[in-house]
Amino acid sequence: MIDLRDRLTPDELEVWERMVPDGVLGNEPVNGEGPAMQLWSFGYICMLEASGVPDAVMEEFDRLGLDPGLPLEYMERRLAAEREKKPG
Image 1: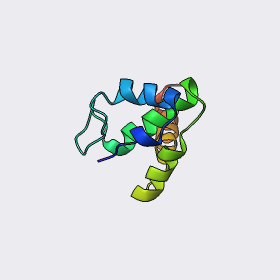
Image 2: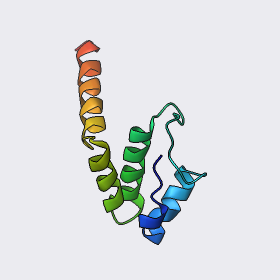
Image 3: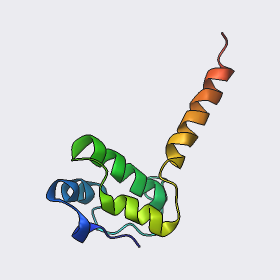
């Protein structure tokens, strides 16, 4: 379980409370996303709405042994594959 509430700024905490109403990311998917993707989404939204990706998010990625760039790489590969399918 991931609970970042005590490691966030007030602005980041506001985003966390919107995204994670019960306060803790568990092992169950939410809207089809597992905890790692939810964590990445939270970091991305903080980048847009708060002061950037919280240090706590990067620390959690390190703790979990995950590369925070993987969702973006996946999206880029998927978009490239879709472009190749479209007739020229």
